[in-house]
Amino acid sequence: MNIDAIEQLVRSEHETWKHVEEKERLHHFRLTFEPYIFNLLLLRYGQKLDEFWKTYQPKKSEKAFVIVERRCHPNFWFVLRNIAWANPDMSVYIFCSDVNIGFLKSLIGDKDIHLIPVFKGSPGREEAIKEYNAFLTSCKMYEAIDAEWIIVVQMDVFIRRKISDEIFVGEYWGYPFGWRPEYAGGGGASVRNVKECYKLCLDSSNSDAEDVWFCEKMLTREVPSFDFRREFIMENVLSRNPYIVHQFWTYIDSIIHIDFKRYWDHILTFDFL
Image (tube, rainbow, N blue to C red; front, side, top):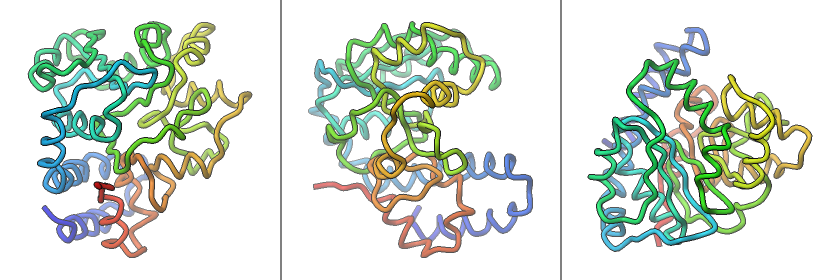
């Protein structure tokens, strides 16, 4: 897999799907392009990240990466090594299920990663999403984390620059939504203050998408500026040199007409020393 092949794939799929209803089109792009993107990242950085992983050991820290994933997801191998490289001084918590805990133990080996099974079974997509949203807006999650700050990362996230302390501000924020700039941001890659998120989860239950739920809560609170959030985490609003990227390939309508190869090649390049 190379950038030229990805460009041809993206242009072909965009031409085929450009007149399809937006929600269906975006869902198709998200699922179709993800394996190719991670295949390219694996070819570029898999060996380097695996060499780093061999001597990596997470530390007890006031800052932690958090993954909430009940599936034996194919991106786990890469994502674990990616977060380890991005900041090896942070703790790691994975909230998993009885279905994937054995899979994760085999991937993690002797690394001191907090593996906490909270889900059971393999429900359908809608039920799984509902349980995911309920868990991330419950006190149960935040009281299980012995840290002050967390970065939540989903399986379609990659980190291309080393995480610095500048990112740990505010109560909850993520990549800015282009369609709702006043919102604090999306949850696919998000920064959260554990104590403050715990407090927010005390007073009501949630049946919505967890990031929208938090965004509504944050409308009356201070959040980092739109430009600050865009600089650090990118999804649907393009950024010149983001630290963290979440499924930007879903939103190709906004980047299909720019210098495709140059921009994609840049975004899919990690800042290795």
